[in-house]
Image 1 (cartoon, rainbow, N blue to C red):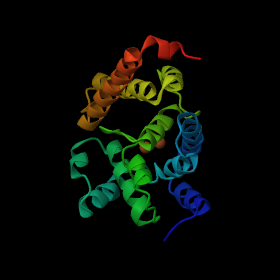
Image 2: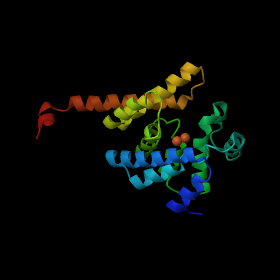
Image 3: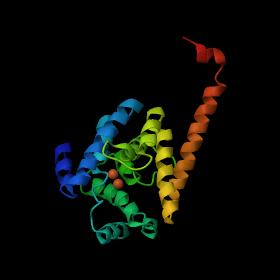
Image 4: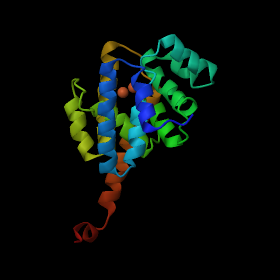
Length: 206
Ligand SMILES: [Fe+2]
Ligand SMILES: [Fe+2]
């Protein structure tokens, strides 16, 4: 049941159009780069990236059935179908590919919505999904620029762009994304506060 990296690549790529696989290759590359820059394990980041969109092109009925029949987060079914494939992908990773690493499974599960208390791997996969080299949407350059400052700033810019589009289109907003964004803003503020409360001498040291 355990799949090697090569088996995963073969199986996942067979389940989507070539264009989407190109996107996945881009997410793999960006996830590795972000992991190296921000101190995560690039091997695990890449594995999560390989699998993250495995269910993206499944018929929506099949996605809904996996969620409903396996006691997954059925609240998702109250929101637009593009939100579902992450939950299904996490299920596939665990039960079809035999991935046991909880953080990899969660990074797949939360790559679209984010969540409160995102792990380092959650942040990397979610941000890589926004900024991979093939992405071209209004605002992507700002997200790429912020991603160079910190994972949190990159993700806030990413969620901002998603929320803006949803508001403009009059679509529903999955509340977990709002919670994720609030949490990231607080993390940034706390880091800034910690930085400012350091004694001046320490800042100047060296
Ligand atoms: Fe996705
Ligand atoms: Fe994706």
